[in-house]
Image 1 (cartoon, chains in turn yellow, orange):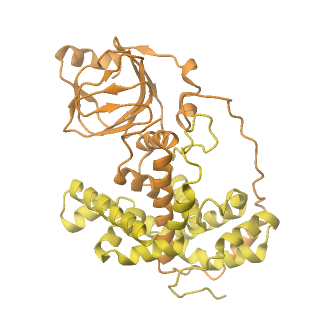
Image 2 (cartoon, chains in turn cyan, purple; image 1 turned 180 degrees about the horizontal axis):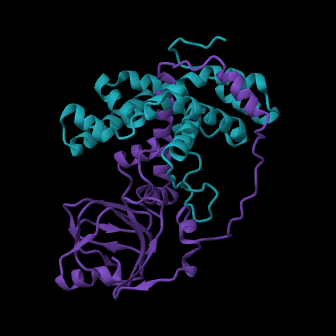
Image 3 (cartoon, chains in turn red, blue; image 1 turned 180 degrees about the vertical axis):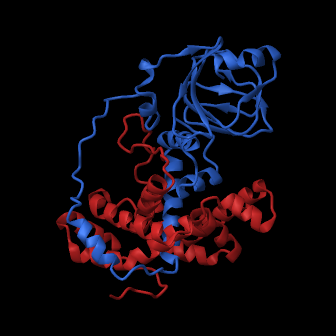
Length: 190
Length: 215
């Protein structure tokens, strides 16, 4: 069987595929999504686990979860790639690290709602995949690498500290700086 | 509610990346429940995770990867939206309310003098979580931290050498800070505190009773 192997970002129709999976258990849409995303989800999990078999197993669990939870995806509220990322991340925490990840409940009566319900719209446009890819391109390579390590290394602070010989506190402030730069780059794009 | 003390970016990124352990994550999640602004920042961090995932070089798996998954799909029905029972109103937000087994009115406090507390069980052996209630206008004994302390105010407010902290505010204190939190006079202050080392009290007397009181 063939997979996409070009390094270009997967197509933007991912959101529509997830909606089709939820609406009618659309197997063709799911197969297309699998071909686009499974090699990258596998790559992500391989980075975190450094274990090929584990990466394959956890990727399969992630894809099963995408199939099962497709109805929870709301294309109005976020990027499909962000949603897939959080599912893979949660599977990794739960099945590999055997830990819990406490999270807020969006429908909790004690949750404090946003003051201006209209505001997230602007934020979403800025967080569109295209805007993020573009903003990442404007950052110095070293800063992108710091952000990448924050997401793709189980203990990024120690790893970076060991590699660069910098104290952990300095590493943390550099990661903060890098993420601040990304935020500023997104502001400039709008 | 106006929040003045937000999540800093390394807590935010560690939480978004999934590398933050359960105890600290509990404090982060409570702040997020009370802070729409930081929820937006979390969405941005997770969108960044998604964008970086898309940019990863693909890694091919076994040739039968898709066939193997398809076989499992037959036995994996899609989740139907199951109704979740939620109270009409609550003071303590999720996920903390579930950790405590109920809202504020069900808590069995343990008296510590100017304050009362309840220890919270988590699966994280590297941290200790506790809910604290500091009596209105009263101080907790001055202390420094052997490690880090994250404090999220749920109700009322306190002030210390750093600033004033009101509902939703999070204070991130490291080993270098010696402070004496004092609850503001108008009401008791209830907060969630996460630590990774025993607090170091300045008073010898307090140090003496520390193990007995479990603080």
